[in-house]
Length: 329
Image: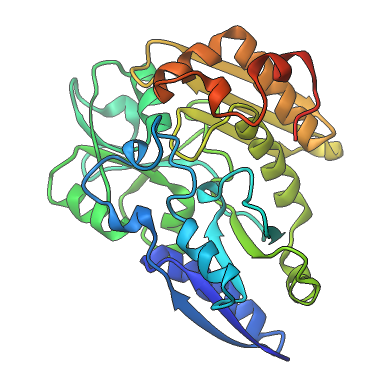
């Protein structure tokens, strides 16, 4: 079997993910090596993620661009990403070869002293750099004092233990994968804090048309994870969103094989929150239908404020076209 080179970010969690995929490939007889690639998102650590990248703060590709450049240049054969970091529309020349079985997609409440959000005292200090988490926290508890929190999982947990925050919000998947659950106090239900599209899932990316590589990786692809995340990413794509916008999307395959999608768009200050919940059979159509309904109910105005410009200039199609038609590539 040929030797395969995996491109990955250098964080502890990213390397866990790359090594996990590497171990599965080694079990199939491949010789595997991992190349660490530093991305824009890794290099800029002194500002909130929502402010990194293009004007409007969508943050598209800030954790993937340099890895894709290495893939295009042939320095690596495949890339392993957190799916929520991957733009909903891949650049030309790449394809998503596999989405392995998904970890817990929900958010986790971590604290030294408190066991759930409701236990927090008035004006408690909460750490998160996610506009999505901030918005939903503020909608629940307008009194909370929310502060930016950057760094890898270890850094964030150290800051919590040092008393810089009363609590922090992290993805449950990262804590579970790294075995760092000592301060995990509450898994927040998706109907209370809707996760990011693709949260908890991995993405294995290759060069478009690489049939041999696609064949090697086929066994990694999980149909349930693929259907759920396709639905979530269809919603995000219809809204022109990246990984750092106040949009939540959580899809799950329920009994009978139907998909159930819960989604949220919220003002970062928590003053307005729009929710949608629906079932469907086609992942992309379900995501698009939810997005169109949320946009028609005022999500476009919320997102225009966040982006600082009209959503029409970010989306692949104008809003009117999205509302008038279910067809959106």
